[in-house]
Image (cartoon, rainbow, N blue to C red; front, side):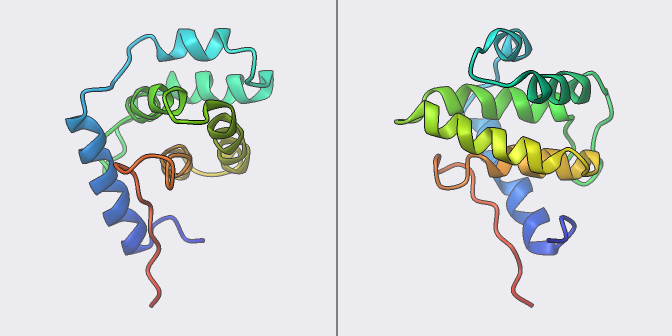
Length: 125
């Protein structure tokens, strides 16, 4: 998967815009992640370390922490939060060797199919 695929870029930007309009950003997300007994320590470490980076991803116009603060609260409010967390853990695990941008896409993708605001799609060109 090429994370710079035009379909991924467009759908990621659109998904972020829709999430921002929901006003769900939680500034205590990092504290909640640190305290979450369902998240393995290696996942917490990746999330917390990546969140410390203040870099604003130029294609999407957000930081990793911005996206995490939008996505994680919604994971907890899905109809099956435990299943949503499993998907989230898989996506974060798959992002470990990815770029900053790739990590953002993976976190967003954890809500694809679970929340109508997020739909990461791939071009079929």
